[in-house]
Every structure is written in structure tokens, then in C-alpha cells.
Image 1 (spheres, rainbow, N blue to C red):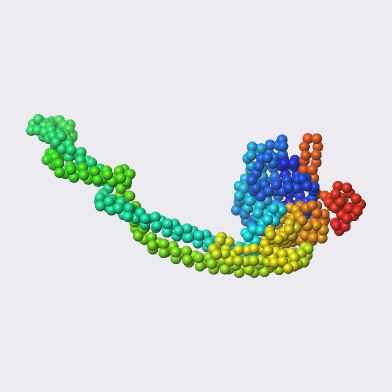
Image 2 (image 1 turned 45 degrees about the vertical axis):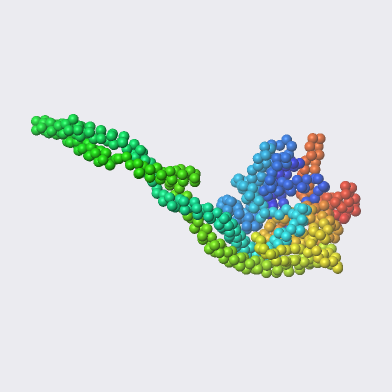
Length: 552
């Protein structure tokens, strides 16, 4: 329940700090006194988007804070998920709005995103304003009424999960069909590209090897001459480097007995001699191998031209990229070949999920049919005392051609307040006062099935008066007596008199500014307020007596 509300610097409100009682309370005040301002501030706590224009003129920020008792287990669970160390007895929601346009939200002094604020607000407080009467014309709301009374949350979750899987598999099937059609249209072209790359017999590293061989064949004579000269410098009889080293080695070996240090040098020279001798042998063999071969050069050039042409055609930089493209084309062609099998498999999965979905939809339909019987019976019983002795209230359930996220049921609430008239949609035949009574009756009907501790009715009494208003007040009082907090903002004395606690919203004007206030009325103040509601601005003894009688 809403225990405390604190508002500072919100439009006409300078500072408001007020406690609320359990049960049925009423709020009254002249038009324009600030009742809607208070509701606007509460809307900020429910996660509504903020506008810096609501900050009181001259202030730098506004603050709205509410303390709630935690009577709803779902709210406790949500808070525990948000903050494991939260107080499970109550929670404090605060919203701060700066003149710069920035806003901050807090739950128990911990910063909180607006998404959590909205979720928590839906579990703690329901503000029913006049425009919400339009919900009666919406199929989603009508379906929600049936589901609330059916207590079918588990079945709806299971159905929704199956529906999501069904829709996902439908999308996969559609995409597979479209892809297959596109691929089949270009299959010949893809096959041509693949055959061209496959017939090229591409090998990794081939291009680099061919380019090296091309350079060698192109400059064969120069390479052969250079190798010949190098080999000559190394092995040319006594003048060659190897011959000279052999002489050095012999001389050092001859000194080994007389000069032991020469042995180390001799070993190093011998190692160098062996290495150079190997190099010379390799140079000689390579010189014999290298020869100008115009036929082989032509073959290498042709092969490289093929590789370069394929790279240019496909926008690739290497043979490796061409190989990757070839493999991708092969996989795509294989996919095209297997597309019929894949589509058939998806169709079977869609069919299986569709049957499962229909079975779960039928369960929901049966539950809703049972709820519809309850709604028809209860609504008639509740509306007859509210001045509709000949009321007809019918819940029409029709089956949709295609499943939706909520099932396969289309719901319509049909209504007639008079004899001889066929029930039609509420929006077409009900007056404003009748819609208000229907909505209050529905709220009272489903109140026992939801764990919502606080309901605020904002002028739900529109279009009614007299005895009917008194009976509507009794309905709200009954709701408030049933472990629930009900607050009614009203202009009718018959409703105001039935509240256990009475609050008044009023304006105070001075030379500079207008300020809205709210206070809890004492007994005599309450008599006077209801008397004003009965007779207007002028208090008469008759009006006061009438007010006292109403309060009895």
C-alpha cells in the first residue's frame, strides 16, 4: 500500500508531505485545485518520462518520493532481484528531475533504471483515470480480464514459448524457400564459376614458386655465368680460395708441435675449408642445372597468366583466396542441391510445432470459456444494483484464423442496458456513465484475482449521481475493506462520504504565486467539505445537515 507521499517543487506544489491510510479513502477539491498535478507526480514514480517544464518556477529541481508497504510477493521478488539486501517490509521510490532536463530514479536510495521502476510500479499501484475507460473497447484488455480470472499464467507462458518457436521456425522456412529460389536462379552461373576454378587445379604456394622459377628462367644466362665465376674463385687450382685455405691449413698443422696454439686456428680453418668446399660443389651442380629453357618459360608464363586472370576476375589477391572462393562455391552448390531436403525438414518442424501450438491454444480457449461464464454472471449481478435492472452483458469468444501471441481467441464484451435491444459492443451503445459503472464492476470483479495492493480511481464516477454514486462508493469501500487500499478522486458527495479517510486538495494564492496543497480533513472540516459539494460555495444549514446525514 501507499504509506507516504512527498512532493517538492512540482508545478504548483511547493512542498507536500502526507500519509495515506489503508482501506477506502477519498480525495476532493475544486476543479483546477491540483488533483491532476498530484497524479502527474505519482506517474513519475511509475516510470513515466519526465519533462523539466513541470519543475516549479524558480526551483532548480523537483523531487517526488513515495513509501510503499510491500504486500505483493511479486514486488518483493522483483526487489530481491534488484537488491538482495532490500527491506522486504517496505520500499521507497524517489524520482529527481533537474532543470537541465536530467532525471534520476532511486529505489531504497539505490540508483535504478526506469524499466525497473515501471515493473515495480505495475505491481504496487494502479491509477485508473477516465481515459482508461477506453480500455473496455480494446480486445487485449478484454482478453486480459478473462485470463486474470482464469489464473492461467503458466499455460499462457507455455503457449507463448511455443508460439515464439513456431514463428521462428516459420521465418526459417520462409528464408530457406526464398534463398533456394534465389540460388536456383543463379545456379548455372555459380556452377560455371566453380568449374573454372576447379579445373584450374589451384595449389597453395604455387604462385610464389612459379614466380621464382620465372625469374630464374628469364635470367638463366646471367645466373649461370655468375655461378661459374663464383665457383672459379673458390676452386681455381692454387689461386682459388679453397686451394689457398688448404695451404694455410698445412702450414698451421706443421706448427702444432712447436706452437700448440696453432692447433685451434687449424681446426677453425679446416671447418671453413669444409664449408667452402661444400658451397663450391653446390655452385657447380647448380651451374650445370641452370639452363635457358624457352619451352618451360612459356609454360610458366601461361600458368601465371591464368592465375593472374582468375584473381582479377574474382577480385582476389592470391591463389589462397581463390581456393577459399572455390570451396565456398562448392558449399553453396551443395546447399542448393540439398535445399529441397532442408525445406522438407523445416516444413515438418513447422507442422509439428503448429499442432503443439493448437493443442495449447485449445487449453487456453477452454479456460477462457469458463471465465466468460463467470464474467457474464458476475457483471450482471454487479450492474443491476447500479441502476441497470435490464442489463445484458455477454462475452463473445470467436476463433481466429491464425494464432497470435495470446492464443487463437478473439474476445468482445457486448452490452445492452435496455429491454429488447440486442447486446452490442460497449463503445457503440454505452453512455459515459454506463461505461464508468461497467469499468468499476470489472475492476471490483478482478481485484480479488490480482495481488495489487493500491488502486487510485480518478473520477470514475463520471456521468453518475445520486443513489448510483452511493452504490459505486459502496463497491469501492468493499474493495478497500478487503485487504486493499482504494483511493477515489471524486466530485460527488455520495462517494466522498463513504471514505474512511478524507483528503482535500486546494489552492492558495498570494501576490506572487499560486500554490497547491493537500491535507487530511478532521470531522467538522469533512462535514463542511461535503456540504460545499452538495450546495456549492454558500454553506447552508440544510447542506450541513445533509452532509452529516451522508456521513452517517
